[in-house]
Every structure is written in C-alpha cells, then in structure tokens.
Length: 264
Image (cartoon, rainbow, N blue to C red):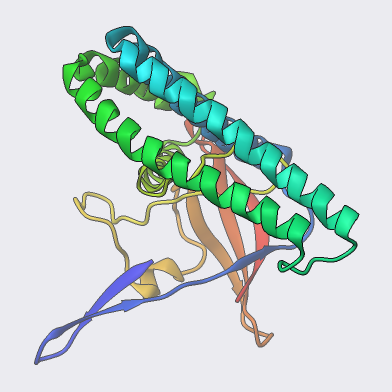
C-alpha cells in the first residue's frame, strides 16, 4: 500500500509493507482461491513451453541448416555429459581428487576441448537462428500465443479467480518469462500446489481512477463496506496489532467472511 503525504516544500511518497499471519485455518473457499491461482500459473507455464516448441518446429521447417546445427549441438552436449561421468570414474580409479593425477588431468582436458567445440558451435547456431527467425512469420506465432494467454486469463479460463489476483499472476508470469529469455540458464517451473500462495487486492477510493488510500482510511475499522478486502475490527491490546479482515470470496452474493490475522 502506498500513501502520499505532502508538506509545503515537496511531495513525499511513503511506502508501508505489512505481513499477515493466519490465526486458525483458512476457509475452504480461500484455499480454493489459492489453488485457482496456482493452476493458472501452471497453465501459463505450459503455454510458454508449447510456444517454445512451436518456434523450434517453425525454425526446423524453414531452414535445414538450423536442423543440422541443433542436432550437432545436442550430440555434443551428450558427449560432454558422458565426459563428466568418465571424470567421476577416473577419480574413483585414481583414489583422489587431485587434478594433477594423470587420469583426472586427461578427463579435464577432454571436457575442456569438448566445451571449446560447443562454444564455437553455439555461436554459429546463434547466427543461424537469428537469420532463420527473420524469415519466419513471427506475427502469426506471437498472435497465436497471445490469444492463448488472453483466453487463460479470462474469468472463464481461471475458474472465476478474482481478477486482481489473476492480473498479478499474469504479471509475475510475464516478468519470469522475460527473465528466462535474458538468462540462458533461466527456466520457468511448474508449481505443485501445497496450500500456499497469495491474494491480491486493490486499494482504491470509490470513483477514483488511480489506486491508493490513506493509512487512516485503511484502518478505519468496522464500516458499511462491501469491498472484497476490508478491515472490520482492531485490537490494540498487544504489541503486534490484531485485525479482523473481511474477505468477500463470493462477491456476487455480498457475503463477507471474517479471517483474523496478526499484523506485523
């Protein structure tokens, strides 16, 4: 949450960050909301890998040279993997990890030479891939992927996941995907649901076009409020304030369900 506090000289933006610890068990509907968010993430990751496979298929169809060099690169990676297995065997036979031992030194030299060949092939494959990509119908590939993402993020595609949470999952996916492209070792992973996750809420005054409420408005206590997230009671008797939160999982029916948290 961000509140803007201004003085006579210049505006200041003060950011408050809070943690919430459940007291007792979450309602089953809350767990289901977490599960829907997790399921949406996994579906987006699935579409990402399908899109990568579609790109590879299109490249192979467009350029036979790309097929050859990627095949050569895969074969070399297998040789490098085997060379590391041979190195482990050499260590066992030598009875030491000392790199000056002839068996281990020979294994290291083999790995070094194979990696040098891989680097050269990789640079060549990069050039061929870039040339191949310029000849592809990238617009069709990207539009097909984007339409699948949009369909997945719709209410019907998420199992009626709350739209703000859905937007946050999509944003996290987009950032993770972009990072995986920047880092060649980056990889998007599926998440096995373990009951954890997050709920995303938007704090905005009625009728406002931008997000943000004041600290006083957020902690005003029990009021006539049908927002999906609202503080309905406070307990200041402890060092860490206890608050009662109303979380409206069935927004269409306007049912407020209270869950108590410890504010830290």
